Image (cartoon, rainbow, N blue to C red):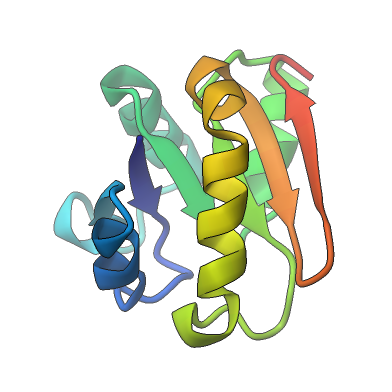
Length: 120
C-alpha cells in the first residue's frame, strides 16, 4: 500500500511506515506546501495512493463529490506524532488494507476506528 502523508503531519512518519512495509511519501517532496486539498486528492487518485491526514476536509470533499477515491486515512486526536499513534496506525492499516485498496475513508483515534466504503 502506498501512503501519501499530508502537510499537516510530520515527515517523521516516513521511517515508521516504511519500516512496517508501506511505501510512503510526504507531500512536501511531491508538490507545493500550499497546494489545495483538491490537487492532493487528484494526484493521489491518479497514482493510486492513500492520503494520510489530520485534516477533516478530505472526508468532506469525498462526501460532497461522492468520489470513489482516493482512499483517505484521517487521524482524529491531538497528539499525531508517530511515537504516540504509530502502533495504532500500523495495526489499523494492516487490518483494513483491503478496503483501503478498494476505496474507503478510515478514521482512527486512540481507542477506535471507523471505515466508510467509498463513495459516501
